[in-house]
Length: 326
Image (cartoon, rainbow, N blue to C red; front, side, top):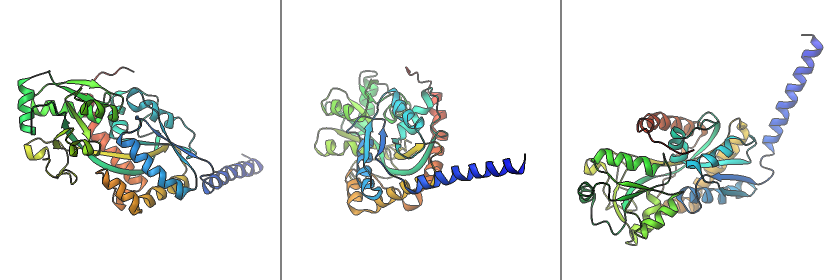
């Protein structure tokens, strides 16, 4: 390579790097779209809207929440994986879209390798709940009723590989019981049918059940956390009744693969500022969710935790031999 050609290449590379840095420094210069791969009204949609409202004020641009459902959340997530890595198309997901779906659906992208982690978002627990028509008053009576009526009860699933689905399978395995699944596109419509006594049971994101349980429209049998859930302290944990079922229903914010680090840092800082706002903290607390500790808020912390969850759950899900329709 001649000296002249080498100089030209160096100049080109420097120019490209400089352009990328300049673009990142001016970010954001237009509205940001955040894809939620679940229907409006569910807990993940609520978290995205709470965060988006505050991020709009710190970033100085509109944050538009777009619900893109279908194929177990992979349609919405895939749109972000295929987007330009400029920070204007992001994704808020939960355990279902970030872990469960990736173990079952064949996609052209990889849930870890083809997305850029930005920040971990609030987490909750899963709660095993039932409609008021279920005759059992506690978890032990529920197990006895299910054993006496195998295959007669119905439980909500929000797609193959969803938290509700895998949790239900786990519960049946741990208790030697059997019930049938009713499929829904998201948690909100499943909640409606549970409250309306159209179905019997659900492993639901705990914050989504709170109003209904307090209002006497739904029964709460057990929570899948290490300790009792503060908003419903009278509900026992699964461990208290002898069932080893711990489950954190967590959320995160990602962008496409190759997102420039300055853009990642700007978004992460905006999320952290939202967490530090007492008004946002109260809204999250009212949902019964927990804000990540400061040492859990970095992109690296999300990447590490995400991989740990995939490594833990994928072998379990794949061993269950669940079939999905693409």
